[in-house]
Length: 120
Image (tube, rainbow, N blue to C red; front, side, top):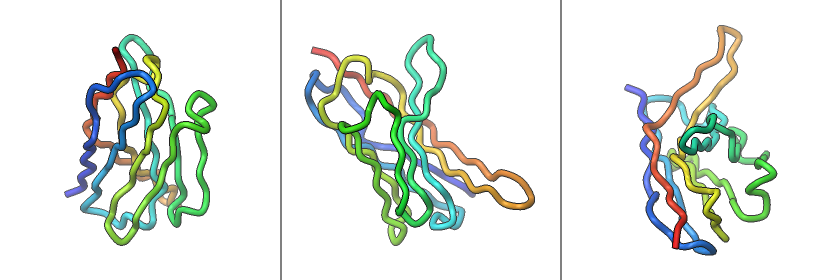
């Protein structure tokens, strides 16, 4: 069955760093675009970073540009999010998402999320 399992969340002080990882299984990982979303309490889920299926294209939300880096390893079926210079407003549950636009429709999978808390 399809699984996306996030790891690497935790508590970090402002200015610190964390690296989130997402391990995928049950589908052809290399055919999917991968995204990281986050959702803070009382707020809507927002797209943080995206990477194309072969890793050649990357996009970031303005709020994280220059601080976060998304990467993927298709041979290992993993996608990562390196988060530097963390701010309290980065506190949220971070979700891994796999998406593929096929002629039959959109295929869309989600992980269970990992909590990131930035606080002193």
